[in-house]
Amino acid sequence: MAPKACDILIKNACVLSMDAKRTIWRPGAVAISGRDILMAGPEREVMPKISAKRVIDAGGAVVHPGFVEAHYHTTMHLTRGAISDDPKRPAVGTSGGGGKGKPIYVEWANAVTDEDEHASAQLACLEMAKNGYTCFMEPGTVFEPDAAAKAAEAVGIRGSLADAYLSDALGGTQMAALDRSPPTLERALKLMGGECRRNKDPDALIGGHIAVYGSGSASDALLRAAKQCADDNHVVFTQHQSFLPQAVETDDKRLGKHALVHFAEIGVLGPNASFVHMNILRDDEMDAVVQSGMSVIWHPGNYLFYGVGKTVRQRMLELRARGTNLGFGSDVCKLWSFGELPYLAYLASRAQGDYISPGGVLEIATLGGARAMGWQDRIGSIEPGKRADIVIRRNDLPEACPGTDPVFETVLVARSKSVDTVICDGQVIVKGGHSTRLDESVVYEAARASARRLMAKTGLKGDLDWPVMGV
Image (cartoon, rainbow, N blue to C red; front, top):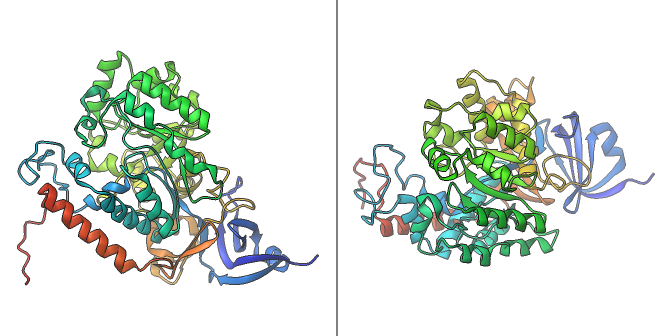
């Protein structure tokens, strides 16, 4: 038979396919035609069947599906270093803040412009791409979703957006303090589902889903409407839930029972529900989660950062053992960057006497994230017919040695450091560790200028107490 034409052929690779058998081809090859994977398998079988316009020699390094960031607040990306991470600093804008008496993150959100949202999202998306992430889900916290969409498209990664800050402000949450999103049921219902218009083009990089902010800020009426809207549009429904003990206690009192049990009773759980954090789950809630077939988006970074583990044992691995799908979400990169959650999840589990294998965290970072976004048929593995979202590592660094366990060395040792080439939707968007589509210096300067403006507006000073000398 005549060889099949393809646009890109990756050869001489250690391919972590993430297929149903978790097959590793070494040496392996992947053929890409347009935006799709045409063929993947052992090099000796693929190469005779392919005629490629472009050949990429992986040099024996690991090749794997692009990671999926299942929960990220792109508007808040520039807060690291601007908003204090010192737990003794005030959580509201008093000393060291803007003096307005509102929570610091609310002050920041109230100060952002569309230009700021674009600058923050573009830096976040560029950082994702350079760290091996080809897809993200934003949880409805961008006031102007088009700003985030344009930023992601410019970088070349795919993502899903939701309508901005849907809540009707039960439970005394921070939502009531946001100037641009009045917490009313009327507003939420009017906006709900608007971002699903992006799904009309099946080839678009940016899609839409349904999100409410959650964490006690949504009435039963709003939650039911959101789940129904997600069902009608065949998309995911997501919200924050059960993050800190005090929030869970408030939910218990408001609902008269455990929150996830209540959500199951009112019909807002299901296979297309993907709830974030879920740090505190009681036995009856565990049963509700497992029986519903929903996904849970795990954020081990914030679990450690806020010291939740001092009083609460995480139950993510119990959920996984019972069949619940897990994805990873970074929330806001504070003391970590993209690509480090698998490592943090591994350590957080070991710290409480549990164990998850390197392969397990790789599954969560790829297949799990894809399913949590409702895109499991599109991304998450290297298989014919799926989108060509692929990461090529480098192995000319010490962290890639000794080369005996490519999964362990990639996910837990080299982590993001070994990312060399990133392909998304069949396009090379990162080569040699740098963007092929953007002048990175322009992105960085726009981000720095935005952060300076926002710090000046809010009066935030960060934690740097040392004198900075200069002209």
